[in-house]
Length: 202
Image: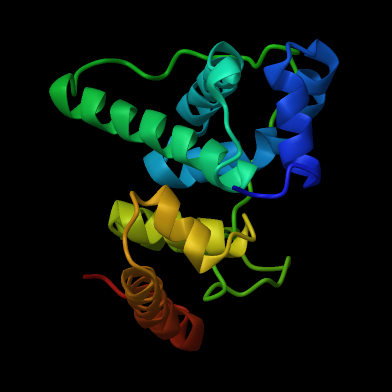
């Protein structure tokens, strides 16, 4: 069990008691990290926004069953990943379904998508649009676990132990291996482009 005085856990425990104001704070605080994870997972910002809404709806619906057995973010990111994987499986079953309809969030405000999400990617804000597109392409070519682990490690500030839980209870060694391989692939693909200005085609 984690410390119930942890701010995130304490906030979720208020939500568990039906505190709507706490729920609104929780959504505002964690909407962006969840959006970023889902965007990296499925590659569709509009669909990521829609699924993020479902994540927080599920948080509310299942609030009474919440127990702080691990960090709150671990629990939240696990829900997000599971719903994201459900969407990937749904797409595989119904590839002709259109996912292009706009889906505004509940308060009508736009949700910013973070474009850089691994420590292997240059953080310079002046990167060209072309390079950013190639970075995105390289990320989406990674296996799902590598994408998820890299995103959580960089943007989510999540420990390797927590990542292991989010990825289904795998070992710490496996997490380190997944992150190492993902970074190696990104560096291999980005290095030729950064040196020559040309993109390395597989």
